[in-house]
Image (cartoon, rainbow, N blue to C red; front, side, top):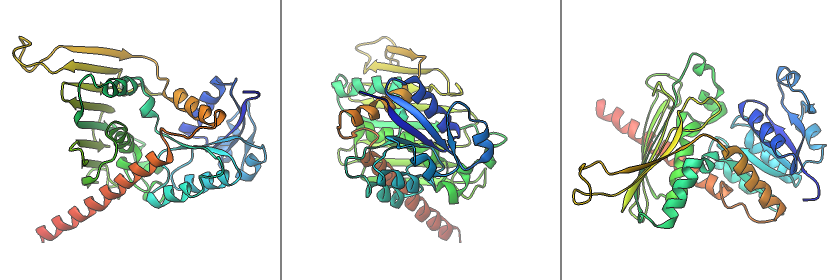
Length: 345
């Protein structure tokens, strides 16, 4: 690369800060030239880089890449404007509030512009190693998947824009469960059959605070996800059952460190003829202490730009696939609620 790619950030909240840190850690390939945020108080606290109150002023910096870190309702319009100017776009998940939003974005993915979405869980070390093992065929094919992903809530949880349907488009499933559903697709591909139950019985947000999703594909592989805002403990766990063994990714390296130490548990299938502890096969545990997921996904994006190759992971295809699953989840959950209400009456 002759000179660093000129980068801008739209939206400077939690994710904007993370993206800035990644850009600055890769100064040999990327240069942060400006940050856009409409909030005067937010901009006043930003130092060491130019800030802008309008997108047009940020675009005047002749960007190569825009990192879109805004709430869901703004992401599509910003992404589309940037791509229309020939700017490569890295957009945080979810890619909008519904399937139509991601379809609108995809319609502008042309003329060599690269588009990638922030499904960084694919790049977590436990997931990366698990995927390598699965792809090696060492334990045969996947039989089923089970995922738990949830938050503890908190005193300020009710005030979060993520629980406002007009801004976010959905609740905990769209905010957090989307990562687990994306991982299901990452390991097993498309899922054709969907069943979902949701509730908002505790937080009363008018968006779901719990979602139970059951999926199955044409290959006969099933997956079960529970996404929750009432675990009272930050929780991440992905169980992968294969023909000849199993794996579990538990804990998650994060900025807060509240999900526990990330680890991968791997075990061969062992019946009583191979072990003295029936139902308790020997397990190999690997711990991970460095979260490189944010850096690895951006490095992948930069490589796609520099080498002019298609984005093949966390792509618009991946984003559309998971958003279609979520839309079908919401539709099915609504039908179930109506049926139960009819039954009660």
